[in-house]
Length: 443
Image 1 (cartoon, rainbow, N blue to C red):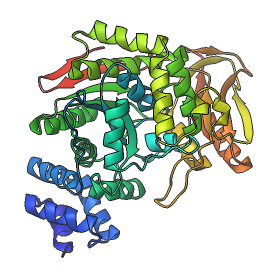
Image 2 (spheres, rainbow, N blue to C red):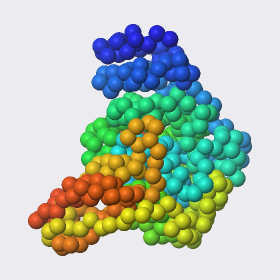
Image 3 (tube, rainbow, N blue to C red):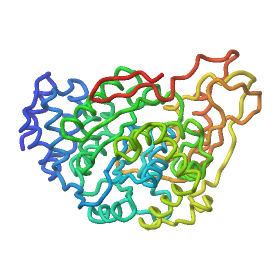
Image 4 (cartoon, rainbow, N blue to C red):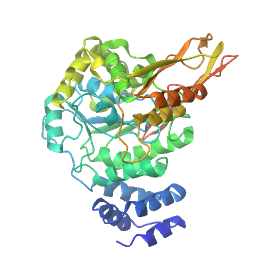
């Protein structure tokens, strides 16, 4: 396929036809288009955007580039959740088993880390033995048996997007709204869903920090879902500070286990429960939001949700003993506190700087071929607005070596700022709800 004229046309502000996008996507999936040409086209899209017909064609072509999940009769309504990515965002690890424990079928296909954000797959892979490379048949049978499967994109599911996802991560083309929307929705539409709930992040640690950009992305994905008969709801949530306390793959798994035991950080649990309520309403397992929340909270209190996670870990080859002994997760050899240099108020806990520090320590990828060190990361001890005294621990670093330790301590010095006066309040944790009916302000 001759790609250069397509790159030039998009670079110069023109549009590609739907057939050109379909042919290009399928050729790239067959490795008939080199990465460097596709990277050039992606950068042109970042600069020039996509028209609606282009976005629809790209989404449908990526979704159709592989097989689709199909279920027989008797399976509960299938609802998935997806986040646009954040620092400390381990919501999926808690929400998937929690939703399944109240009767929702959750075929959750997740991705690896992008840029400064962590990925659900990388977190799951920190559980010894855990498999995310399930075939579609394995995923279908597990959902029918357990109500939930947590897997990655194999060659069967939207393989074109799988390649593009990795390429975007390595070429600085993550943040474009049409590319984000097409990538997310192409995977989700291949899952055979009856509904989809989206967690769209806003704030300095989000890929799209500005509220209006987040709302544009949410509206775009809701429209793509609704037009393809997949009812879709989006909540806009805060990412001007990390979510929860832990940032780093194994550390976030340990925090997620604690959350399912009833000891999760309040901000994490509020996001989990609000997204879970949306899933329950779409699935029809609750008639009202208070009823949905009560069912979700009861599943945590009874231990039902934790046992669902145990069943998933066991079914996918992981060591279920980590749920009772989190120390079986990978452990970093160097652990050191970062302490306050002065008295005052925590002005900022900057998520992007913290996410980039975790990546630099080895907990994420800087190039496509990088491996992941599951043990490294940071555990925060303060939130914006808290009063601290000189010498108080602000965060704990878990590092593989002295270089990683030094990188993390330097990053924390700039990420956690102490000021003399209380700062302005942070962004509301959950601020907007987006549906086909429009945008509702929640806070």
